[in-house]
Length: 324
Image 1 (cartoon, rainbow, N blue to C red):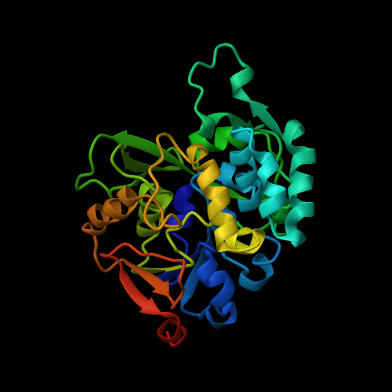
Image 2: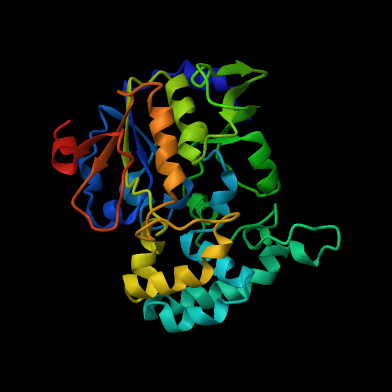
């Protein structure tokens, strides 16, 4: 584990880009037009894929929840279906070019995961927590699998989440954070401090979405003046080449799959309207968090049907971003 102070003291550029890899960017963004002289580039775990990594070549992987590197979006979809014993519906809905991927996940699944419902001590039989990936492994074509080819890109993660993948063998230098849970968001939101080489971040029971929980504070601590989000679509469609528009025959086929498996998304999941959007409370949450610094975050967007953005986030078009 590296000393987080060394990361803070590093001579970063004044502005940062975070790649989330949502479908809007996957299909439309020109990765070569990111001004590397101006921006430090971070990438979110589900965008760490064999197709995107060579195009982006990020400076850092920002993964508060490092277990997201254990499975890609397609594998997470399969896990949701399996949690409800509905994995059989995939073959009729998936794009033919991804059927083999689904079969590979099915072959690996029992070796890579633990069915917590089989444990008599596990009383809360919630579908979204039924299967967990073993802490010493990951799926083929997952983020960890992709990182074998990028061993020098540092990872920023959180210690409790790290324990869920603590026995995974990887070579990347790692900077650790620690969550300090508070009740409701207050003026200490951006008051993160390094203690014992770890960045202690104030998190809140009424704050959701990994960006608001940790990424926002991490990049503020690294003293960036502005950050730009790319592929931050706020949808349930997944990321990179494994997004739902790609792995299913059509949006309608994805929607049929999603409606059949939404119970496994989260506890008491409440679909938005339209269903591809993330739950409404996440949008409302951004309005609360964004009040802390209204000029810090800008969402880079294009004209794309399946995307959404919190109303209080500043926005910039792809064309104007390319000029920066």
